[in-house]
Amino acid sequence: MLTVSIAKTKEQIDEAYRIRETVFVKEQNVPIEEEMDEHDDFSIHFLGHNDIGQPVAASRLRFVAEFGKLERICVLEEERGKYHGQKIIKTMEDYIRDEGYYKAKLNAQTYAIKFYEQLGYSVISEEFMDAGIPHVTMVKSF
Image 1 (cartoon, helix red, strand yellow):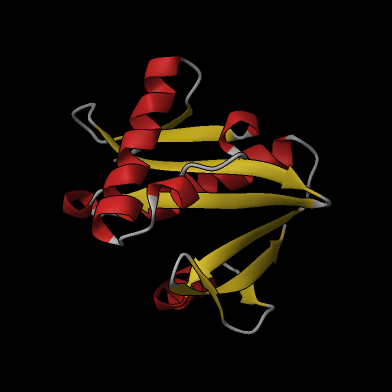
Image 2 (cartoon, helix red, strand yellow):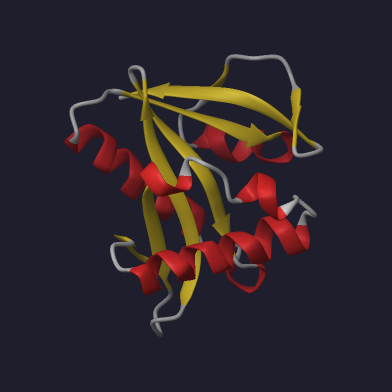
């Protein structure tokens, strides 16, 4: 069972960055300067801990126009398949609603389209490349 909270301390945010670096930079070969960008300082960072308290998932959230924009959603490889992605997204969606927003948006890697569709997201764009990886934009209304 994943426990998700907002990363508030420098140590918690650094843990979120470490997970993102492991998944996106080391596994997917995203350049570090693209992964860690100018939005990090102004985003809300989420950190997920597994049932023994280890940080294993991370994401960030920004508010852009009328959307809560879910970004950098990732789970360490050894923890995948345990519904952690669903849990961190639900937590982010709850936060979006709590802030008075009723739409969420994300750029999904194309291999993950079905995952997001199962969570209620719909594709609204053509495929595009981001950091050398094919993506589509998806949205959901609450």
